[in-house]
Length: 194
View (cartoon, rainbow, N blue to C red):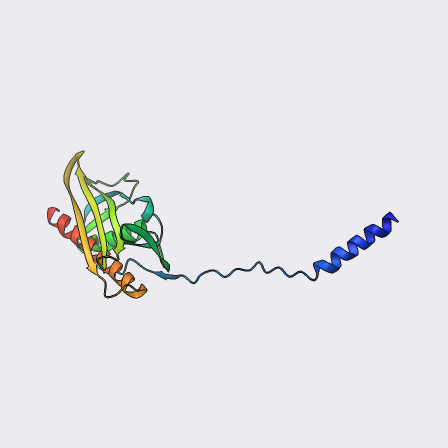
């Protein structure tokens, strides 16, 4: 009798399990990826390079990803379905290397052993978002150049770029443009000193 119950239970379990279709697939949202760094590297041979050590690029935690942020009425949100292809630190570093190379200023990354470096650059990102209220892309960062343990130069670079409209294409274009203009402004502040 007991065997009969077990066989019936196994049969019923097998029979009803075939009738249950659980769909565990879920569709992921479609995400478009864009490059922040749209600067083109130029071939240039300099007679001599000035060297500057890149100590670091500090980025607040809200920007430590590839998300594109916008603020509206002091509320910060993410643009849905849109990301940068790389994180902000790598993109900014790439732009620095390309722009500074045009002026024969070579960025050296840590470790600095073996290189005769007299000046060091440190950046801290302050703002990097779209301000929907004013329809502007904003980028600002502080920079500091130290030489022989002393602060040689410091300042804040702040740039804005108007958006044509609040859509994906305009937002990305404005973020790319404001990033390039910020890096070029930094180069213009530093290059005459070297």
